[in-house]
Image (cartoon, rainbow, N blue to C red; front, side):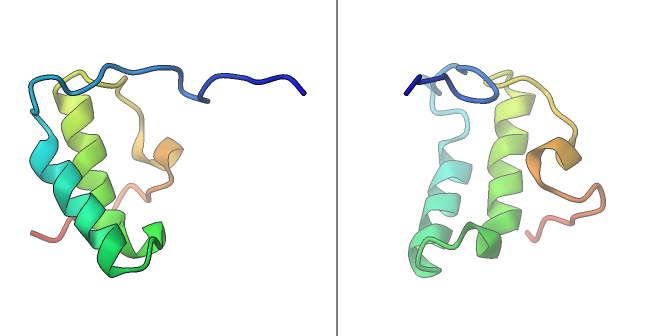
Length: 75
């Protein structure tokens, strides 16, 4: 059995906590929703959007990350 790295490669840790608020909201959503990520799409999109905006991961089209282009974030 051969082990491979993550599909999108490695990405920097958020050492300066630039996206920690979005990460906390996503983790809380998962906890409340018994670890069903499909119930936390808005929180997930906000977290990934923050990571892309802060260059903590490569920018990707939302459709490549499992989102529809017209998904709306609830604020």
